[in-house]
Length: 256
Image 1 (tube, one colour):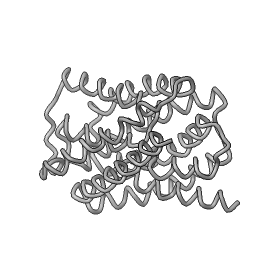
Image 2 (cartoon, rainbow, N blue to C red):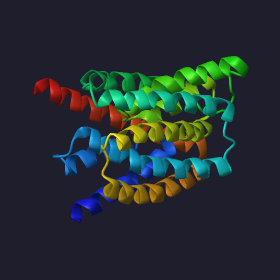
Image 3 (cartoon, helix red, strand yellow):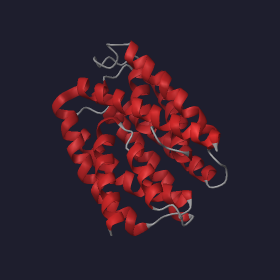
Image 4 (cartoon, rainbow, N blue to C red):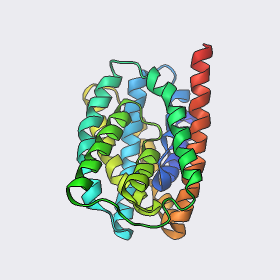
């Protein structure tokens, strides 16, 4: 029961952070792996997806009520992410993800460096694509991030926010709202495969889901209240923490 309380607390905090800038997996995935070391990794990832989809869905609904969601971008990206996330989840049950884990700190470092350097990035909402070009960009980004989310996952929300800001000209608040829609599609698709293949701890997943929803409601309110500047600052904090965490993990694997 004490383990469940700790995992519930981790899920609450993950939901709060994820609702604002993504990166909730930075908190929730290590926690669930630490407290349940004897379970298969795919089962732990499946349980994580069950909790995550509930928190992300709550955040998506809250954003949709208060922010104008760019559905012309979010919808095709979500469809592509749904399809490829399923493929990624299928792949992770058969192929080790060590190569992706090794690359992750370098990719995150590039994201952080670019965001730090571009001081005005994401401050103004000025979409740069429309029509067919917008749809193809959205499909490409949704497909790539969807596969990554199903296959591995940490940092998915942060990657989506960065790409919506960088490639579409969104401000950070609008990018966060659109990212939640795509993230729900990713989580749903991966969850379908994990559930079908039996890689799911339902009771723990539902407990963590309830805690995620509570955290996501608070996180969404914070983002609404303090706007894009707050989202940008927290985004940089989360990405910087992800760099350290994934870098240490990569060094540990190499040393071992």
